[in-house]
Image 1 (spheres, rainbow, N blue to C red):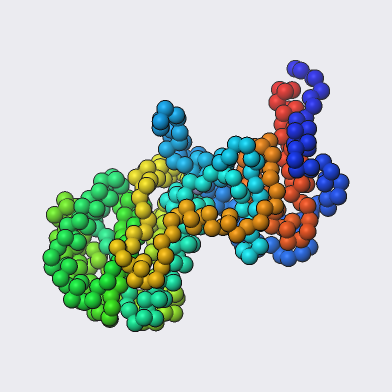
Image 2: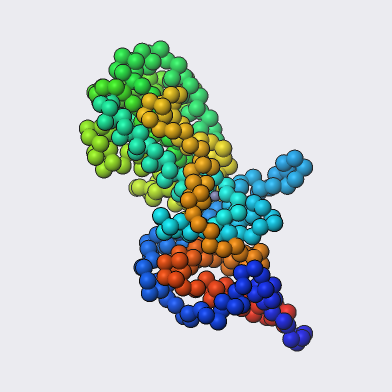
Length: 405
Ligand SMILES: [Zn+2]
């Protein structure tokens, strides 16, 4: 055994531009979770811890690499999301958004995946939810009507998810090509649709990809009547596409969403459409994020989540038909813009040295660091320094133990 006294690698930490060493003296010691100023939003902080933990789980499942332009890179960018820097020369930056009272990181890559990243998807779906809510309100205020139309087809345990989606895509091409469908919708004053793709998984029937659509009409229609009509045409399209035929009761479901604007928001039409894959599934059917939540104790869930991530990679979650955004008074915003919006309106708190960032990643403390930035900003404290000092000591202790082993 080697008993050389080890100098803990503290000096790079304390000599960097943070000036941690000087500030350590003035720091309050042993502060609790909330400090003594504004109470921290515990619920928000807890949900954020969960999102970061789920992202760790997603990246532990999605490890695959491929060669791109002669370089090996990850198939799923969630591996690097909020971990790898954008500009090598700069450190990771801590920001605080005064308006939202939330901290966030800068100079870090994002994956912009609405499907497999619990952090990016939160921001994107929230942005999509609010634009949809605004669009629906505009449409209803102008005297229009909207209906939630859900399309499903029969499936069984063991059906391949990729094949099911491929078959449904084919069925929709056949469905929308139908002269009868086009003519009927035109007669009813149909103006466009939003299509949301969603999938759940159940023990009994396996993968269940389905589609929530919002149909926009310029006047009220009979939802029962249109349901029966569409169900027949959808059944026919599924058979022509080689899919198992849906029955006439379950294949298409039409719900009226426009009695009043408040009814829409109470019903949560926009939640249903934009956040389907995040919410907790009902009656034993699991959403992809349910699978991720259960993956730490269930290897089969890991396999399923990977299947889902591979098949859904690159797919659009929400598709508005041509011209509908203009009609509803909604401007075009990309997923990237929705995420970057947060950073634009934030103030820079400070930059972290690379070694500190490596420690934060090593101990999986990203959510905790954001929480401390918020707490420090709101309370005028310096708990972040305490915390980083603690991480450095933990790391040094581990190094000593390893070198003695
Ligand atoms: Zn991400």
